[in-house]
Length: 293
Length: 287
Image 1 (cartoon, rainbow over the protein chains, first blue to last red):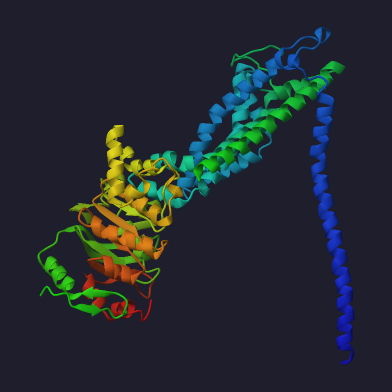
Image 2 (tube, rainbow over the protein chains, first blue to last red):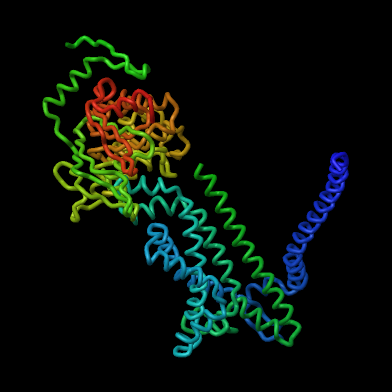
């Protein structure tokens, strides 16, 4: 028994070695495969959208408003303007509130209100967007009808937690000593926040804002029963207004082949828009961080 | 009387001329006015007593050092002097701290006003991520709209006072973060004195600096003494011996509360301490 110990150990370790290598190869292939699979949807969507969308895409498509299919189908200028108004107004509502709330949470993390805001943003960011749409529909649309206002408000509710959360996280990254230095010089708290904390965190905050804008500019569900959509170019805030995702939805389920092709083109426009915002956020981030050094 | 007989300090590193002892003792005897007075001041974090019952004068136009082992509450005590502890919601103070006869913790006192009068320099240099000029101008700009020419003058004066002007006068628009550690700390001092405080608190201002930069800061402190009252927390006993006029020795009690066990003219603390624990500490036998 005792004689065989050495040799048994040797043979067992050789077998273990083989097994270890096998497991290594297996796991490596599995993780590699999973990574590829994770990329497949994105690549597939991109290829499909570009392939099907580019045929309907033209300068006229981007600059004309709605026309019947018998007249060529027109363009999506009205929807682009609508989305710009909806998202712009939503940002105008959500960004100041989100940033100010984030300042409060960072300055008073243990206060009841701070904890409540933190918990509230978590819940709000997990809320399905259609619920937000329904909520705005109930409190606003039933009484006053569909409007750009209602759509913006729904988008603002969706933006709010994203803005608050990202701003809060970026402010947290600012060294505590900077805030203390400012307060130590006799700065009131709001001044310390705006003259030192916000500039130091600006890169991150801007990135967060752009991502929030990118996120809501593709939202469809909350706009369905708030902004409703429209075929006309409209800038009135109290009337229904067009939006890219709404127009996409309408055209995609249209029996006309022309409309279907236009729907793909709108998808391409939205993807490019989101991509531009993302790249813009990255550029601002690198540009600012180079400025700081 | 005035011949400077040098006495080797017990730690054998720094020497201190005897004449300093006598002149300082004289100055003390001649009645220095206390700029700040701590009157049974205790700091609590919730129920935990961090600093217990401190009674201490901070003499005007003198440098007062607070020394003691790590964790004995030196920084907490220092931060009580300009109400920096207010930023920690759990912290609270009992007793009184007087600044020129005014209780700085009185309810009607504006904390912002106290921090203007009692400035602070931190352990690690913490310039704002702004230009050198904007760093120094930050404080003055808080209080008033100041004409450009006047502001330029203030910035130059402060930087000169902090012995940094010659090194940065050609790059005032560059980021304060581009400076070396020692320069950054002098920039922070310039930033602090730009608001013309009466007292400057320094929380281990040299602990992140090399010996050369440390020496510069120490020289600077001695110069600033004529215009300002300085309180410095330091781990470096040679530094306390070199720069300060008065020294408060702090120690942790068994219940982990920090207390001041001895306060005297610095030269006396380092040569003939009254408390055995102070002697053990300054001679390096513990701590």
